[in-house]
Image: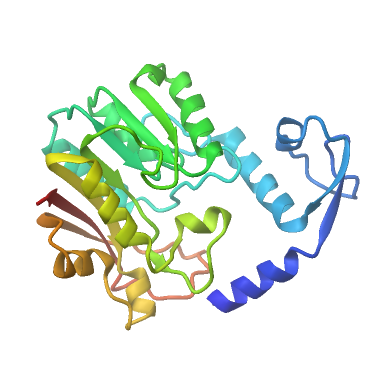
Amino acid sequence: YRKQRFDFKSASHHLYVPISEHRIPLKKSPEIGWLSRLYSDQPEFFLPFTIVQGLNSSWQWYTKGIKYPVLPHRLHPWYGTYFPTRFDHLFLFEKWLKRNANSKESVIDMGAGSGVLTFMMIRHGYEHLSAVDIHPNALNSIHEDAERIDCSQRISLVHSDLFDQVKQKADLIVCNPPWLAAEHPPEGMDQAIFYEEEFFNRFFAQSLSVLNPGGKLLVFFSNIGLQADYQSIHPVTRELEEHNRFKKVNRYIKKVSSPSKKTRRRHNRDNEFVELWELEKV
């Protein structure tokens, strides 16, 4: 399935769509509001078909917003911003937040994406957070949504590849990393889904240098990739076994909810679960 997805994406990059006056001059083409916002100074040009697909889908999500059961307001992700479409790990985090109501002095949401984890922490009384992401449109999303609910003064936005541009120390780092091992270098939004071999080693090493003494690290993960590839090694387990950087405080597990009858998923989810690892700096 991964190879098919990669081959299809590679072939699709050779198909281009004409853009004229911020519209697609083709019969029955959709209206895409992003074209005027992202390409305001380009009246005539071509875009790869895959980009147009992404723009169209993203415009629908942006205008309608996404309702999460753990938030009272909708999120409106910008084009190219990762947002979760499954909620099981969010329910795990909601329980953790209720058990750990005390506000931390300095908190980082690493790889914040649409900001759902950031806004969950804001809702639970965390006074100030840093939302970090490699994609600038993710930060635009969080800024706009924070303005909508009047909490932008409580969120700092940092454009960074992991912790490269993070200058502060933290008492708590929260991260929902990619859950699937990459077979090809991931690009664009795939970076939020597939991880390269050295990703987790970089992440844990940099987290160690950023955390204050006694600081906590919360990492979400799923066994979905391990079910598909039995030779894969759990990245958090590997970190704990091979390095003396963190120790396990708790591991919370939740069985994944049954899929909709309308789903096209190709794998069985009977044995799938998500987990939240609570680690402490050694």
